[in-house]
Amino acid sequence: MSEPIHIIGAGPAGLTAAINLAKANIEVVVHEQNDNVGLRFNGDFQGLENWSTKEDTIDFLASVGISTVFLCKPYSELAVFTPSGKRHLVKFQRTLFYLVERGANGESLDHGLKEQAIAAGVKIVWNDKVDEVKQGKAVVATGPKSADAIAKGIVFSTSHEDAAITLVDNRIAPKAYAYLLINGGKATFATCLFEDFRSERKYFESALNRMRKLVEIVIREPREFGGFVNFFFKPVTKGNRFWYVGESAGFQDGLWGFGMRYAMMSGYLAAQSIISGESYERLVQEKIEKILEVSVADRLIFSLLGNRGYEKALSIVDKLEDPIEWLRKRYNPSPLKAVMFQIAKRWYHSRLIDKQCMHVDCDCVWCRHGKGAHGAQA
Ligand SMILES: Cc1cc2nc3c(=O)[nH]c(=O)nc-3n(C[C@H](O)[C@H](O)[C@H](O)COP(=O)(O)OP(=O)(O)OC[C@H]3O[C@@H](n4cnc5c(N)ncnc54)[C@H](O)[C@@H]3O)c2cc1C
Image (cartoon, rainbow, N blue to C red; front, side):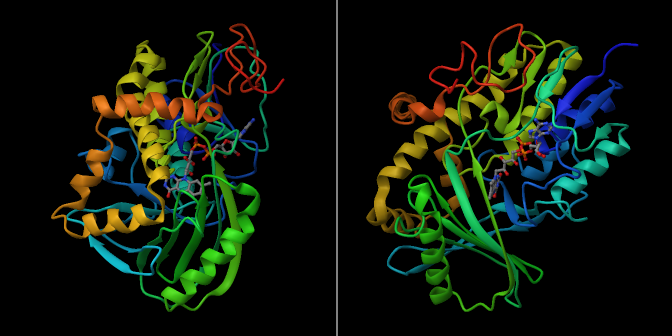
């Protein structure tokens, strides 16, 4: 009997790869370190962004073999509070993002992907932390391995109507944003930080106080959650045996941390590469790398804006006929963005290094002592 393809990690990247491989009649085994999916999260809401491509996210999901059997609710209005406390209600001509729930609950994205994987014939082994794969091929989908940005927040019950609200102010969310997402009596509030991680509690409390001043909302049964994301570039395979997908490959939107689409896209591309023999590097370069490079250039621009820049940017957005189009253009490559990316690469040097072990004949899935792991810890 031939060795099945091992998939390490049952997040969106790993499960998308598993679903597509199983549908192509390739035997796959998913190894998940926890006893269920989504346990890195706590029932918090996240957004599947719908602005970086012309293709709608629902069509994108179908194109990577995913059925939307989970909560996937469109939002096309966003209230943005700038540092002065001014509220800008931005209305979009199409869905801005689709709200999904993360965690193990029945309506969550993670549960929906798990059900689809099982229905496609995927075997999932729970409580199975894998650090080495000695034989056969593996798709490594273990999620982020370091923190380039963090989020600290709460999930709670509320009677507030459904809404999507963002606060930008470096005093409460340095170089990032705080967000409040409400759906069906459940809410998620969090602040994101791109620097000064040690002060996360201070920023979280300041952000919560600010939000309570600006939004009339009753918070019931709050539960805390937190998390982190990482981004870096290349390499994405090792020794013709390992395919890195999702955040374990560093695929993350450098601008604002919307990594789920890249996770699922890369899971799909790794499956295509295994099925058809196409070069995964080339697929990644074409479909993911360019847009992520632009997002890193945009990260540098965003981080230079400062509180005055946020006020100005929102006053520009207020006058736009189609803010989605404007947002999408942020992700378009251009000669200027290419230069900004080169500058950003130096700026974010420590973040953009490869975190994988690249000894070609090594069996470990993500150790950091390889030749390719420039400057990484021993
Ligand atoms: C607080 C927060 C809010 C976010 N909000 C958004 C948002 O609004 N929109 C968006 O698009 N993205 C958002 N993201 C990013 C998004 O969650 C990630 O980009 C996405 O989950 C990455 O998917 P993944 O499959 O690569 O990794 P993960 O979702 O992290 O899944 C990895 C899986 O691998 C398992 N695993 C790890 N190591 C091993 C091992 N050695 N053996 C076996 N199993 C292992 C883990 O238990 C986990 O189940 C957010 C992230 C955080 C932390």
